[in-house]
Amino acid sequence: MPLHMRARSKARRPQGSFGSAMNILSIQSHVTYGHVGNASATFPMQRLGHEVWPVNTVQFSNHTGYGSWTGRVLDGQAIEELVDGIADRGVLPNCDGVLSGYMGSADIGQAILSCVARVRGANSSALYCCDPVIGDVGRGVFVRPGIPDFMREHAVPAADIVTPNQFELDLLSGRTTATEADAKAALAAVQAMGPRVVMVTSLVTEETPADAVDLMAGEGGDVWRLRTPKLGISASGAGDAIAALFFVHYLATRSARSALERAASSVYGLLKRTEEAGSREILIVGAQDEFVAPTWTFTTEPV
Image (cartoon, rainbow, N blue to C red; front, side):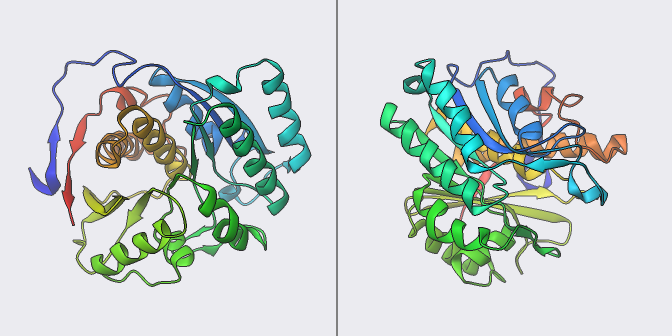
């Protein structure tokens, strides 16, 4: 079949088949209606059998793509107070990883890094995955002033794993990724900032066919590319979902290559089913089987 994908058999693998349950502290935005931030990331990790401790950086009625919304951005003190309460339960040594997404302000970013330090102090094997939400191709920077600098100077260097899109990869690395070789060089530049693993959630270069989208992951000196068919939708929250899935699969396998294959296969199925349904919101609940047993599976190629 084209694009290195194959159909999955109809047999369903049971929940929890990807490894033992883990505890994930997920600090990012939340919406009451729809699926972005924690509203996109939490359930896929839970569906795979993991415990998630969600802490919200913002609480909005819906994502901002609708043009209007209600709600508010929280402050750093509120984030730290919530983690104080978790720590009081004596469970931080059981936290396997921290996932962060949209931060809202540099103040919140500092609070997140403080929480990461607390978790690492309680469990030295815990990993930090930073989804460096800054902007996107075609939209430019959409976060508050100060956030891009905070990501580049503080959050990314503190992370074990980062999951930028192509726009964010270019911004963080200070490079332009017109070719696959450019993307590899940019990925290596971000790794040199501190993270052991970089996963690029969407990538279009001169080598990418017009009917496809690439993803790329690097670990150590190895880089892999995964190619999926291009779908006709651009869904808010998809990046949050794939960052979460990549993180828990990496924690379970300690392989960026394996985590990329599993996460990308699930999110392709999620987006394809969303497109078929004609839904503006991704079908996090309706397409939940894709997280456990993707309808289509994709394989990587070394680059």
